Each structure stands twice: as structure tokens, then as C-alpha cells.
Length: 149
Image (tube, rainbow, N blue to C red; front, side):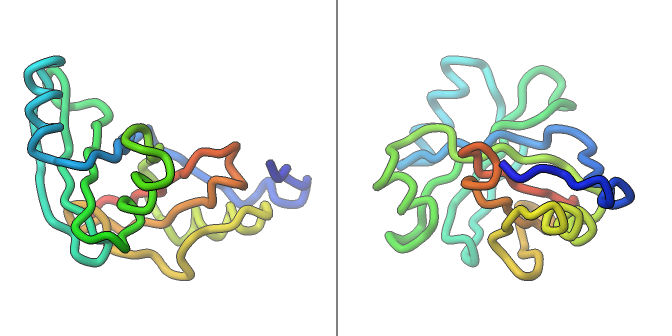
């Protein structure tokens, strides 16, 4: 993993909290039923994101104030989630952090030598702005940066 040079200490990464953990699934309805029946989780948001090629749902536990579990099912075979499922099967796909400013956080990480997937933020769940840190630069983990709408 890249390391932080001394002259970058003024570029804050400013992660606010763990936002959600993304799980790739082949069938969203089946996965929603499994997580509700097995773990008592409840769906707090569901949408189709054509740009990302996914149908997704955010699940919560308890009072719903903590980090969420995001279920991601592919809409088409060329989507990133479909490719992930083909390569790795269902399971943990990403770890997401809430940030106040996705562009500033992206710039701070790029200054530390990390690669991001998009030149400019894209639309994420519920109108959020997102970017991703390349997994090869983050210990094999796809890291999502989420600036809520």
C-alpha cells in the first residue's frame, strides 16, 4: 500500500464513519428475504441505479442509525457487479466510508499515490456522490467514498 509522505499531512482524508458494507448478490429479492428472515434486518432504501447497472437495497439493524448493509444485484451482464459475481461469486464487494467532501478526500488520497476509479464523482445511492479507491492500492479492498446528498 502507498505510504504518506511527510509533506502531505495538511491534506486530510477526513473519513467521518463507516457508511456501509456492500454485498454482491445475484437475486436482490431472494437476498432481501434471507437477511430479513435470518438476521431480522429491514430494508430502509431500495432503488435501481441504471448508471451503475445495479438494483440495490440498504438494510439496517436495530433503530437503523448505524452503518448499513448494501445488497447489489446486477441489471445487466456488463455491469461491475455482474463481473464481480462472475469472477468471485456472491459476497463482500466493498467497504464504504462517509466523507464530507468526496472531491477533497479523493484529492488527498491521490496525493498519497492511491488510484481512484473515476476522474469525477458519480451518482450513488439516494443521490449521493461517490468514488472508489482501487483495491490494489487498499490492501485488496474496494473502498467507496460516499458524500451523502
